[in-house]
Image (tube, rainbow, N blue to C red):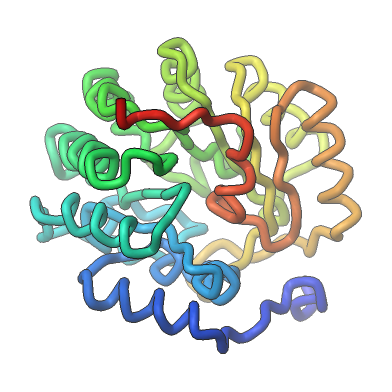
Length: 289
């Protein structure tokens, strides 16, 4: 039985002016963030640094993954004014690197790809020197939808594997191992920097972690994030174990040894944690010409 959270998982309470300013900006622009919706433990730190991962296409996901705190249901929201508001928020935060994600919108014919593309283009137009990282769903394997998004030319394409092969169906439900690897492979074949992430402490075995890291390198994934799974509520998958900081360091060393350019590995690491630092040196932003 898993004991209470160890000391290394206790995040500090936010008190800074930066946190308050980010909170007001998100509220005033009527934006969703994965930081809040997914109960990210780093929200205080990141918002204090005046960074936030903006979430488009509403706040209700059509999927019911058993690791995620985001509300599940049939969305009613499709806000075509959202791309402009997101671009405005990025400008007001003065972000050098913007991270955008979304819920899965399997109710839409294109999975929301058109809104994704409009958001990337709006950010690029308003903020030509800002790096744009997108954390996308799998669009049910539609290459047409994926190409719609890629044609908008984000700088980094992130799609998370989330967990090892054996746990894909019980943890991710609709998503599949092969489909997710296919998203990353397709983006790489089109010349994009690619990124993915996994959780530990959800029931995986060591040899299975080796497998997913090796599979990501086989599709030439550049950036990897590894963090501790935290159970958002009692209805979702339980924590299997608390992974030590030392083990996270070991996985970082291994990931770098097999060819990842950047590995962010630690108990509180999430997909967008220090994303601006991860991309440093990898991007040569000059979209204004």
